[in-house]
Image 1 (tube, rainbow, N blue to C red):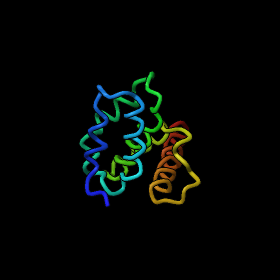
Image 2 (cartoon, helix red, strand yellow):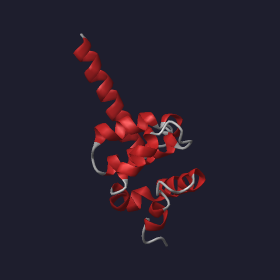
Image 3 (spheres, rainbow, N blue to C red):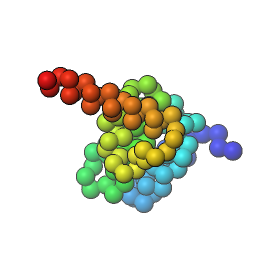
Image 4 (cartoon, rainbow, N blue to C red):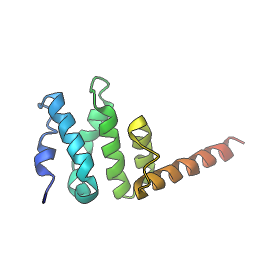
Length: 117
């Protein structure tokens, strides 16, 4: 099996073509639960991809960032990136990640609603 995400992480280099970065993001999303400590070092690069309005895989970058922040127990950031992932954040998936982030969104909604009263 895979022992490291380093091959995929190397493909996130800013000089790589967009399809290569998209491939890397797809593969990293598949292995993030195992290799999140390694991927966490690349969060700044992943965030830049999400912030780039021209980048076609912004939502995929957001989903990956959300999962890494979830594993880092940074739930506010995880929630913000999950929202940035839009339809790629699949609330029908019965995973701990999806359930935790969904609960965080509901808590935040309640907090903001109470604050507005």
